[in-house]
Length: 235
Image 1 (spheres, rainbow, N blue to C red):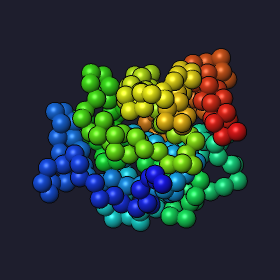
Image 2 (tube, helix red, strand yellow):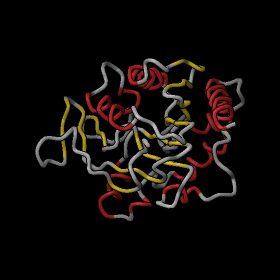
Image 3 (cartoon, one colour):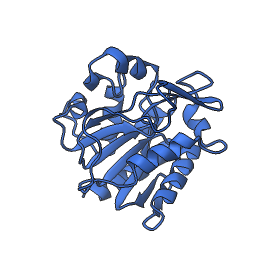
């Protein structure tokens, strides 16, 4: 049976030469710190972009269960609740443990990505500005080609239009025979619904509009479309 990795730090060095913990691809850099949180055969996978500076530092010396979405979990919960993917009365911390069965989380880049030495800023918007760096395809090929049997939904954290289109192209190449568009923030591939929702980072200036606006606004409309697909996927 196909599964995701078990909860914990991952021993993956596909994008690295020798024993180095860092690697460069032009103006992009990688820090070797891949991990997977929660279930190995989940119903829902939450897929961020890459660890930010806080998460990368925590990965080195903090308890593993506390690393994913450190200092932004309350915002992640609000986003998940707003689309009907998470109950209001459950602690978000519970899904980042080895006991979790329904949820899993990781990132599009399992390792930390930096652009010109920075792990924050316009990384997501710049990812597909030209061509994605090689590790993007490497990570998706390794971790998203063969999907677990229980998986129904993958939530990708960013509603940036360029990122949506770039991710869509990656997944379309990965699952060419099963790919189909659903709406402007969702697609289906590999028997799973892929839905883009707002990133919970405090640096995301669109987050509050996405969570709170009516569907009349651009951000509110993206949330409404995401909610519609999520409810259908989990029905």
